[in-house]
Amino acid sequence: MRKAFQDMNLEKTGTIKPHEFRYYMKHWGIEVKDEWFMKLFNKFDADKDGQISYKDFQTTVGAEIHPAEGQFFRWDKAANLRITSCKHERCWAATPMYTNFCALHEKMHRDQVIELFGQMFKKISKNWKTFINDLKAQAMPEDKCQVFFDEFLITCANYGFHLNDAQK
Image 1 (cartoon, rainbow, N blue to C red):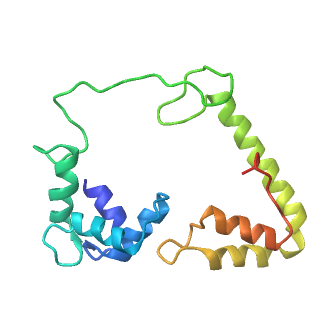
Image 2: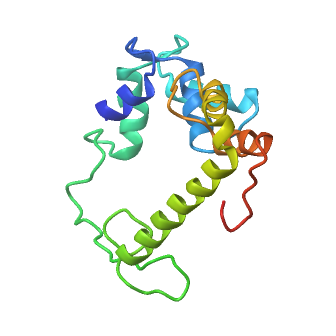
């Protein structure tokens, strides 16, 4: 619980403010209108002071996870250990925990990404520093190391590099 709260508290003030919560919602791919956003934010703001304190977080999120303990895992139930198979078409190999692909397909995807970045660099090489600076300018104010994928695609297109659907 504490780690999740600390991660969401981008400004490290001890409370999660609406703009920090909105940032994570956008990061998770959840786009909502302002009215719905405030309803959701207010659900987690238990004391209604306009910010989510750690106590609010424990009271609301912790109660949803496990009402008695406010922890991520229920100790009274056995863990659901289930083997998952590779998401690559026609592959049923088991995957390592928390991954979508088997080791072979992970390596294939990694090699494809390296090849794609090589093509990108070849196409943009003369303007590479400017390209990187433009990407940095697109970064989220809360996390200068993160650029949303749609903004990345637009920046690539501005430099004449286009990704097809399979590459995306």
